[in-house]
Amino acid sequence: MGIWHKHEEMQLVDGCIKQSRIAQKEVFSKLYGRLFSICMRYADDPDEAKDILQTGFIKVFKGVENYKGDGSFEGWIKRIVVNTAIDNYRRKKVKPVVTDSELTDRVGGNSAEEEESESIYNEVPISAVMDAVQKLSPAYRTVFNLYVMEGHNHNEIAEMLDISVGTSKSNLSKARLNLRKMLQPLVDRLSQE
Amino acid sequence: MTMNKFDQIIASKLNASNYASDESVWKNIEKALPTANASADPQAVPFYAGIAASALILLSLIALPTLSEQKINSAKVAQQNESILINSISSSSSPAQIENAELILHKPQENHEIKLVLIESKSPLVETSKKPSPVREKEVGNIPNLDVNQRIAKEEIESKGAETGILSNYDFKAIGIQCVDKSVQFECNEKLKNIRWIIDGVHVLEGHMCEFVFEEEGAHEVVMMVDQNGKTFSVRKSIEIFDAPSPIINYEVIRTPRCFEQSVELISTPGTNTYNWSYNQNKLSGNSVVFSMPEGRNNVMLTAISPEGCVAQIMQDIVVDGGLKVFIPNSFTPDNDGQNDTWFAKGLDKCASFNVQVFRATDLSLVYETSELKPWDGSFQGSTEMAQRGDQFVYTITMTDDCGINTKERGSLNSL
Image 1 (cartoon, chains in turn orange, green):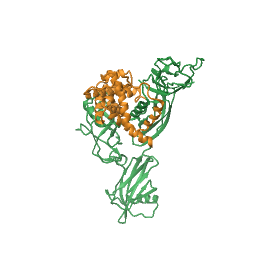
Image 2 (cartoon, rainbow over the protein chains, first blue to last red):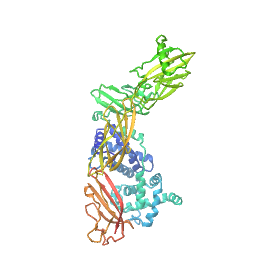
Image 3 (tube, one colour):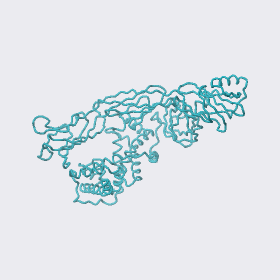
């Protein structure tokens, strides 16, 4: 469900274009939770997530004239915030990401048995998952987010992050592997209960 | 792009995470933004709290503790010529309510900083300076062992010749919102002993503080009687009790057959009441508001606040139908017998855009994908293989309706 009705959304966009603080605050308050959650996925810690979100909102409110109404206003804002997170990653990236050409993405997913056993991850608390994602290296985390959460393919990710397709696939595999490793103790405990 | 079950679980967990809004982030954003244009939005006059005031609003408040300065969180205002009419303010110690206030600005097109100062917590209906309550202080003789009606009669008779002037110690005040079925407390100086309260001449209570719930609107009489040094002093006040609003909810579904969600206009009785609507954590105010709701029963809550501050709350189910429906079959028989040989979701033609993906259940490999109105005949893309009887598949259909709402449907599909 969209967060605003179309009429409401148009009024808010109009208010934001005119720099109405009430409209801007409404947008901020309504979207903070969802957008902060996205930023947390891309950041090392909550402080960095706040910085990303803050920069993202400033870009949104300063550039709201560029919103043409093609998709939802919320979707447009989300894209800006994700792009801000990627910019933040690019700035932080000091050395090139180490690639492992032998590791490739597992096309097609897991076997039925593995699928079954992975249901246990449903029991893992949200906070533990977010914590594990934040502990991934920025390179792995960014690719994981872009692939799994934002739905980009490896070609797109390679272009966005200025890396090779092989690196994108490798980073995704390592992200998954590391997430599994980090969540394993919790999964073991849950399996015993 | 392929996602395995692990990815899907992690994604659903991360999507479910949510966080409370952080005001410090907003303040930093606000600092970096250009100055708001007050004339751009007639309902948006910026308010800043705790800064040098260009105007002081004196407010009469209902049942709030005494406070000096308040942080203003939001305000509803309307601009009329050179006046700013303030209809409501949400302060840091809400629910503050303004009876009414008018602020004359010399240059209404400019931004103004307003400081909200609460002068005193008062019950405006008893102690308002606009409408002083009819208070009579008098000394009467001790009138023990009389029934209440006789006692009042005696007091009135004796009071004619027994006026002793103002007895300021023998005063009392009311606390609480003076509405029907709401508790109102009456309180006098706690040093006074032997206090009796006679409400509407029939209800007798004791103690330096008493609490009473009025069941009828209109003027009610409250008499405080103090027995002291063998004499009885009485203070009589009139209190106005206001009726609570009786809101009703009417609604109209504005049908848009090519959208999953429908616009629903919710309407309540027009008048002077303030209406706050709540649906699925979305909140709107006004006599008539519009929410976007999915098909089915949707529960809305309406809070009506009368100008006197009396509150009534009702909930109602809103039944929504007539939206875009997509029917997805869960089986097909690709055996060329002319019946159910292909699989496709009915109603996708009404979507603005869509994408259909079918995966083999055993290894989640993608066997069919399309964004066109092209039913699946069971053949695997990029292969000569065909779906066989007993094969199981899972599908993901992503749809965008004409209102721009995205929906994703997942499910299983059997080849029979």
